Length: 318
Image (cartoon, rainbow, N blue to C red; front, side):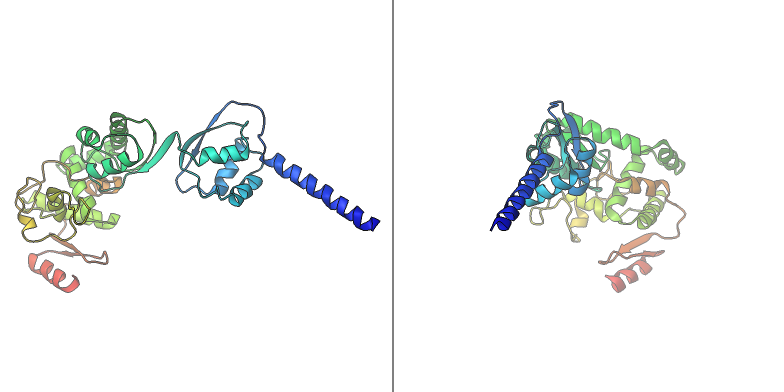
């Protein structure tokens, strides 16, 4: 009996010590109330976040913090963005902050979006007016990228950030190559915006850019579906700004952006191009023997030197 009591006392002591150790690992690192800014990246694992917090001396143990977060189901509630944390916070307090509204928030703007699509996403994440952003933004010059903005960011600040990023990406080297093709910078951006909507991979972008450039040089109609889609605008039934299947009537839509009825480039960009599309235009070869291109439903591309050959590709691979 005495032996059993001794064992129970020993187990109780062990449990008490373990409990005390566990609680100490989740307690504040110190009484220092100064704060540090912590950025939770998009796609960052919780394990990596825990390790970063330990390195910044905001938590005592990344292992204990990780385990506690999983036990309380808090690891799946972490938000991305910028947070202000202090060594005087407990693990529980830190988790509550990280799962709350961040000071800054990440937003991803995709390549080939028009400014209305950007406005929709931006207004869903920040307190901005879509109409005001659209009024201020310059189509084609709002660089698509992943950005970190404060919650109180203004339309003017967003437009400036996107525009400054475009100016950085649209380097002097790219401008020089585009100028060497006898294109103005504006014409280069317009062409890149069409390429962005007409092609997917880098290789195909360069081919499409070369074909469109050759058509432009010989004063042949660009006949780019993407320009018609831009002219048609928002499609309520599809809930998209880009109509999926164009009809023969669509190709007759009266618009200066319709390159089926108007020769040359449209008056302005039709979307916001990626660096790859700007590069594709800079690397375009106007002496390409091809005048036509066709993409099948699987993403394969076929090129033709004549309309007859193009029609054969369409009939064979559509």
